[in-house]
Length: 380
Image 1 (cartoon, rainbow, N blue to C red):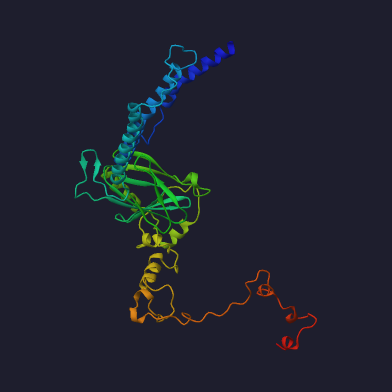
Image 2: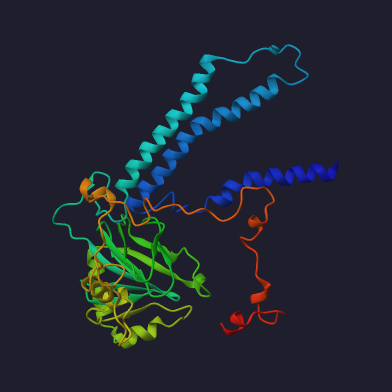
């Protein structure tokens, strides 16, 4: 008795302490710092709320029916012959149908509004993107096992550190140098896959200054656990200062330096490059950074120019007669076998006749090594 009492007290204490323990947890997905992620979180809340309209009544009615119609309740109405109610059928089918329609409409609108390839039309609620606002372009390369960020407008590059201005749209262009991976900054937007030889995009924005977690969300090998990078959101002035600090770095991202960086490595510290080899992004995308390697874009263009509509067979065309559907009535003549006399078939209509046994019979006298083989067969 004392043991069960102490166990009960322990459970109560744990239940009371749970809110305090969880109070320090930051559910960044539901409390993001970017407008795109905020809209995605709202979509989750709206979808969950619409589904709870069905789930909560079903759970409540299940408990109510189980209690009201329990075996010990002799006062409950007992109607064994009841089998139909038009009003109840309308409620049972109409409510889920309306929920599905609402969820479908909500999902359709959100899918087009939050399309990662679609440029942002606002940076925050009530703050549309002005025509003069130019998004910051960042080219992202997932590598084994690190992240490379190219800033083409600024002419710099970084490894495992991403810095963007606050309240400024950012256009990410992403690819991979090896296996498929996933670029994910939960505070900014949803995850986007990166694939070798392909370019994916993401338009997003951060509305709060601070440092946020960026990571890979797709297992890619031994160093996957360390593919993390800090994402800093700073003011425009601080972003300019940061760019100047990277330009003062001694290292330059040349082709040789990239090939060295491309090799698998783990726990890579943050680093910066004061300049980037011109055309490096296109070569990374075409998987032809290594000298002498043909670029995928050039190979595809060459194949198309060589004859995108060439016939599957390279044999010369052969004149074929037109089919019967394309011939004039006077050109339709019988074939060489049409109207030919029918020869009397071999065999006999007599059941069990000897002629009927010779269609597949083997003449053993013509086989080699058989006694009595004819000389004509042997000469042949």
